[in-house]
Image (tube, rainbow, N blue to C red):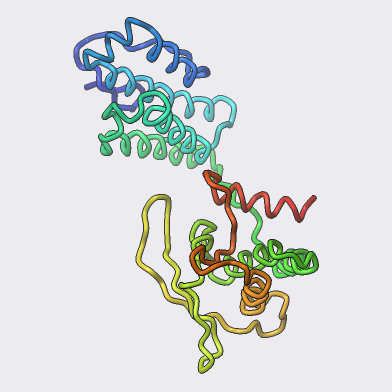
Length: 268
């Protein structure tokens, strides 16, 4: 076992690593590994895992070197690239026939090593690892809610209810998008909307968390009870079998992408 600039590879037999231009890494994987007869033979003989790990290590090195040389890509972008490339390996090219990413310790090690390099680099140059966006203010939230309320459509009411629940619950979009009607209950005695939300991070699902949401103290436009109730009223055609959800996300579309489209509707 040896390393390329700190990244572990699987070459321990003295063989030469693949020489592939990292700029064209996805295309190179398709043509050099999937279509080349030599590499097809190597795949059948069990060498493909070794070669793929070498390519993956080179790609991780390339991402960090780009940050060092030009300032891009950033840490989160690099993590996204690694994740996307792993999906190419697992799904698009080899239909999950290879066991490369079953080795979770190796895969996590690659990501962890790259993250540590970014952290060390940010400390060295005094630059923040992640630049956080501006916080959503009360004023902007009022504008968003007013915009969707005044449109007065079933979909716009869903958008408003979704944003209000996300804002009041400090929830991720993936969490709030899964709030079906059987997770919600209004308590007349408490004067509150009771709900059960499952906290998530990536593919990890946590335990259900229970919340009680009350009437907003000075703004019905930003009131989560008003928003949720308005959405229910305008979406009564939703059958019990389908359940009610705040978002009608098209099949195969990511929640974050869909919500960005919702916000884009406001700014345009």
